[in-house]
Image (cartoon, rainbow, N blue to C red; front, side, top):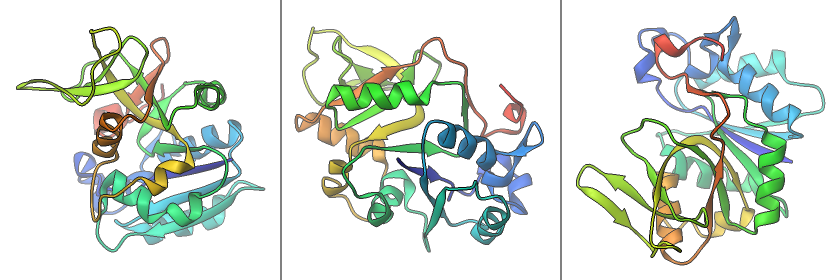
Length: 233
């Protein structure tokens, strides 16, 4: 099983800490965020990981040389310019192609989500991508219909739908920064340069692809991208 960890960001919300170390190596509970996320993925069955790098990426490479989990292949996708989530995924496509779905995980996301169950649910669904999502406060909620399919997003100006909801109603959910993706997605990313994977998901949902919510309502979850959130779950 493969996975990609998004770790290229500048970590602006964590400055001044991230002026001297990359966000991936900022510690929570005495351990780097990267170590926490990597452990979770390995426990779920991941044996091959690609990590995108930009800001202070050489520190991440050096850390991984010392701490690579036994039996896990680790590769790096080095970005000269930040490519955002969609561009970063597209740039790493050569590492992720294959016949099986793979995980995509933000390095600053902490959770107790059952990743094995999420993977199994995705494989059974036939969806192009499954997004861990739950009701939570966010200024960028995604909209899902009664069948759990992505159909739009909520903006300050109102709801923007890319497809008709299955039952005529929508539920706003916060995307949790963890997804399981079928490799076919890699051939459908027509955008170039830096772009958001969420924008691609919305475009593809509008074209008839199934992007589904994997509800994790009862799970603990935290975006550890701010100093006050750097604590264990």
